[in-house]
Image (tube, rainbow, N blue to C red; front, side, top):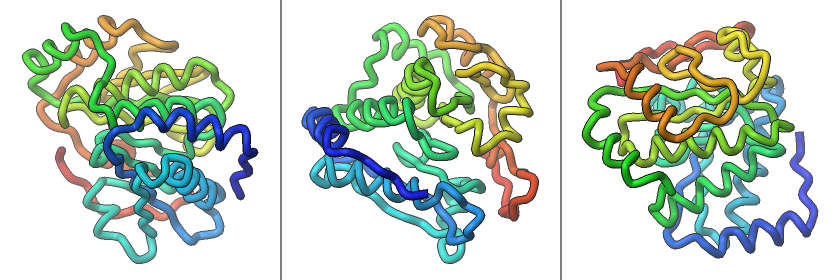
Length: 238
């Protein structure tokens, strides 16, 4: 599916990316399999981000057919996937529609190194989060509240410095994950496999839930199976 973007949208992106300070690496994981309907869209989206940021969004593309070791390194077993912040912030499926706003804001905050969280939240992540947390935000492209939930999860991952992985999961492309959690409304937020919120949580409640569900280690990929899709045969502890 080809991504179509008008000039007004491009200009809005250029204006937003003026706030960027340092470069941000964007890793795109795709396949040449024609069954990957949105792989081309993911590539087009990231190239658009590169273009409108004047190269400050650094795009690297990895193909399932030839870059298996990189897929394994980053625990990627679904395509398309888009990773930021060395894989601790990820999008499983294309962040399309409303989700683009959250993706752009995430990139800007990574670039400025400002998670935008309450200082008390950041302090407690440093002192009380001793384990690991895998946070999944189940979204759809038309949900107006989903970008805020995804951005919040992304910034918790950023502020945790590697203790939290935030994964924004596009429900239509990954219906098995949405079904696994019984998600009938979005955003649905799960922490280490436990559904905690439907909607956008307050920052203090989000922190409390992450601390509650933290684990010593997590097996990745978090959802190793997908019906009808070839599986990557690796399973590691994070």
